[in-house]
Amino acid sequence: MSATVAPIALNALKAPAKRHSHLKDLDYSIVQQCMHCGLCLPTCPTYDATKLERNSPRGRIALMRSIADGNLEATEAFADEMYFCLGCLACMTACPAGVNYAELFEHARAEAEASQVKYTPTRGFIRWLTLRWLFMDLGRLQLVGYGIRLYQQLGIQTFVRKSGVMKLMPKRLQELEAITPTVQLKFSADLISPVTAPVKSDKKYRVAMLTGCAQDLMYSDVNLDTVEVLARNGCEVITPPEQSCCGSLHAHNGELDMAAELARRNIDQFPPDQFDAIITNAGGCGSHLKHYANILAKDPVYRERAKLWDKKCKDIHEWLGAIGVQAPKNAAPQTVTYHESCHLCHGQKVTTQPRALLKAIPNLKLVELPESNWCCGSAGIYNITQPEMANQLLDRKLNHIKSTKAEVVATGNPGCMAHILNGAKKQNLPLRIVHPITLMAEAYRNESGAKS
Image (cartoon, rainbow, N blue to C red; front, side, top):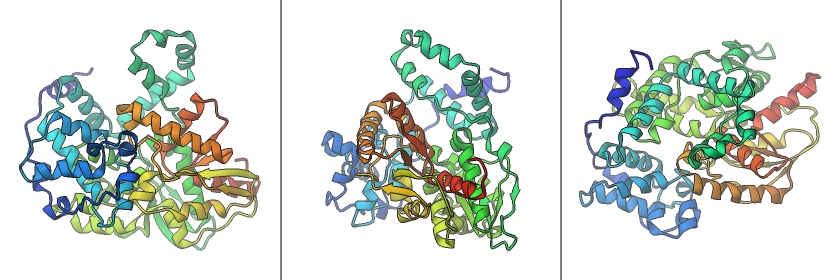
């Protein structure tokens, strides 16, 4: 550990100063909006699994309201319940009253962190290392990516797994090593030019491309595919090589101040008045990116720019659906089923556009997936923090996928892609897990005779 990092790391071992109550300071109309009708219950994966009221959106909101009313203090049990929630937002789709559970969920987790009820030196250090040190600077994240890449390319991972040495390690470490993501040989900055001209000379749109953090490490090829498809559809694409995290990881883990800082960085790097659209291809990131105005509502410098940002931020499927996608002329026959990323369908309400994109590809047979919008268990880092429930949901998802007899699973979120891929490998299922935009890019290349 370097001399400059060590003092900061040691400070992380100390309990942070207690902050204000996030739930008491939240607009009370949001807290009291729930009618307790129970229509959310059948849509909630954790309630479906346990049938316990506290594991439902309604039960969690009741706990939040008790804290907002001053009738309950945050406890470790409260914090555990908030982190047991997937944050899949299926309850928001079902809710007839329009309860903003996404905002409640984030403030409840912030309340849990401010209360310090789960604080330990180890947990404090891990949160500092990941949320503040690693994901606040993607250069550092890429350094970690290089390390994982070497671990994989040099054959160390293969040796570790085949030698049986992992059996000597704690079970939790075995589980984490088993889901280590495959890091791409090249990151987005190595694959994508800062400016990509439209394939046709008559430029129609100028868009910005967000390359993400985990997306960049694991699926930089999807970012390249996205830029190529945009260019084929009349877009000049601006892709700066050095970008920042969107902040969703921080907001979903109770660090709203860090999320606000990252929102400001992104708005500064991608001034929304300079683009027709700001494009994201990651469902989870997109749901967060479209709510910068809420995050920066009290910031007099950024709040108006944040409102414009929210209007300009578009999921790639949503944007192509709005401008009209150019259908490829030919593609290889394939049977595809579509898993809906929770934050794409429930958070962004983007449901028909990905299917329309897939149907526009020649020779592609789309088979509807039972419970397509039911969470797969990835849910950001949920598969790391709550592996038992995450794996139950994964098995349920894989059973439905097998029922379709599809050879390809398309989904628009890197976490879903990685989680379903790990499950397919574990069950030796011959499935290809891919982003819908990759299938479109391959069809375009097939049309031009280029190698996919």
